Amino acid sequence: MVNIKGKVLVIGGAEDKNGNSNPFSNETILERFIDETRQKKRSRIEIITSASSIPEEVGKDYLKIFKKLGAENCGALIMRTRQEADDPANIERLKKADAVYATGGSQLALTSTLGGTEFYKLLTEKLQEPDFVYAGTSAGAAAASESMIIQGGSTDAAYKGEVTTATGLGLVKDIVFDTHFIERGRIARLFEVVVSNPAVLGVGLEENTALLIHRNKMEAVGTGMAILLDGRRITNSNLLEVVEGAPLSIENMTLHLMSEHDIFDLKDMKLKILNPPEAEV
Image (cartoon, rainbow, N blue to C red; front, side):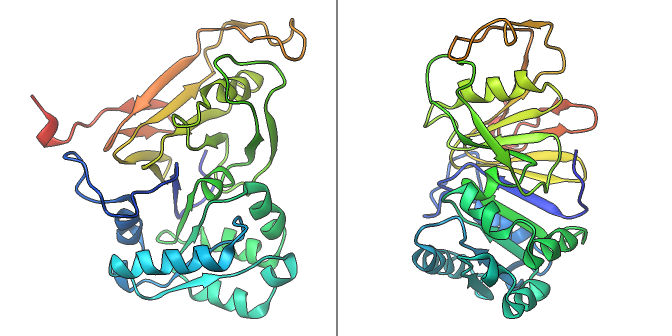
């Protein structure tokens, strides 16, 4: 499922920027991101703000956050247009980067700005380096997959035709990510995506939750939870029998719930539960 040698960190949003902690969490998601980079706090990190409608302000906010965490070798790449994504100066900055961090906003704005550009081509090349890290929060996480959810109702039932998808950056294969998952009641729309193509693993990320994807394994990071929907064992659904707008019924979909430290093997499609020592009875 992972077509890269580098690391991808997908974050559900609201990544505990104030450093608030939980008894079972000794580090924030952003600290883990920094620690996964090649040179730790000395790494060159470029913040990609193309998803945001206020890119300069968002870039400044993240520069302050990373500085507070001890990573001062950071910059904000302001790329509002495809021409700016092809700017040689921005390409050169990416060449020197140890990691990139894509902010929230609109995933469609991110993919339409970067997709097919020289910047995007270099980004995919950089992700063949074992220590390079792509991190994305909210829109930056949703855009990491081949197919991304761009619209869909947050309802109590899964209704046929409610979800709209588009092509993502394709950094990770056969997985679709949905963010702000619990807070915005988005589980229903992930059901439709998975039942429409059971080969795709549906991943719903709560805020302050991340998955670190490396070498075909996903590790849960942060204080929240990740919900995985595996449709490979679906035995029946009414997807083809009902009209648009009708509620969906699905038999035998597998659901996994991940919390911090747990590992999901993307080859074997199995979850390994790892309790932190302080939580053990």
